Image (cartoon, rainbow, N blue to C red):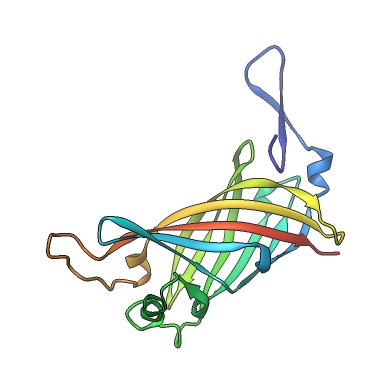
Length: 203
């Protein structure tokens, strides 16, 4: 059963007849704040053509508006602090913050703002919007899976989503690279973004 809606079918045909709203899911409609301490925004990029480097951004904040009766009315807004990037290697993190990559002093935030949302089926959804890195804004679609809802020990109503997207970093002006003697380049252009989001409903 999907997060926003469920389909009921005409018993006489295989076609979808109506779109019914699940009251339990509709009750999740509201405004949410992302709980950064229980969420992660990460990335994976190919290094030297043979292995993957994984990293994440430790500081981010955002809000969600979920519409349990019409997913197209749902929205998301996320701000990521570039200086919080971490890959486990201090020198590499410093290079990522430099002008070769993010130029964090001039462009301290990476932002995402939705322009549309849609249910793909089951618990799968897609949000589309505008991703801004440095001074470049381009469209981005993120595929998400609704991970469920629960009330935590403090009485907070939470929802969870997991998702991913692939981008070409060169589309956002992140073009630094180095050629390898055996052929290929040091850092792949393709980057996989990953999202594991826990958000708390606001009163």
